[in-house]
Length: 392
Image: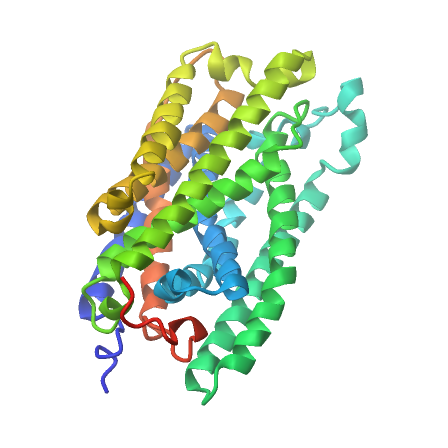
């Protein structure tokens, strides 16, 4: 049986990967040249792009562990694309390095005297460059370790006569792994996003980052599953019932994101405390409010209404359209979170805000495609597949 017969991507994938990495490298090179004269803007745009693509990889890691815990054919459909996305985390670790050179451009606390204010002085124990970089290294190492173990055991399960023992091993790791994921992503959200304005805090913020990553991961997987739905053995599991389940999962993330985002806004706005409300003022009382309205409409209301429909969730093309919209909105949400911290007067989108996601995305997507071609697209000895034939 050939690799193509078991669902491994064909030669076209390699060509697509080569084009992707060429576009990505060229876009990053242009951004780097632009950064010579506008270094602060380069690092802001790079941070947004980095967190967008890291969110897809980490969201995939969380969904993969969720699948190992609860099972189901929905996870069997996207298991190999999920694993491929998690194997890009080492690339994201390397791509984090430019941010290490931009700490002073991004974070007020990293500049001399940045935490001299009385209300911020006590945060210097936590917000300092050596500890910040040490925490970042710890987060990335833990994420890569979880991905490495799950992928190594998944490959071993393919060659095993009975995959249940290895499946149990992955399930036993996934429970603690999700706890580690939630804790590390929460603190990474505090470090990389919330500390852009160190005088502000929100206990909900970490959960909004986690849910956003889950939404990014599942939306990307819907797009990938649709693209692969005519490819070899993968078509056998790409049934409407499985896409319906993915649609339900995407709906859950949409609703949870809206609930957390609105709760954070309502609590802070009604509390009207100077040290908290200052974060929202430029985002809702200047032209940045345009992005807020776009997010309300296209990050929640439109996807929510469409995903309530069974027809939408069982149509690959319609569900893919919703997924593409949500991925674009995830990028908008990051722009709305990051840029007003530097541009308080109103909406201003720089060309690097558009090109940096293309640059990092080209490199990340090429790595994803390379990893996707290393293993068959459908895992063997998957317990969820037993007795599932004929559904849909």
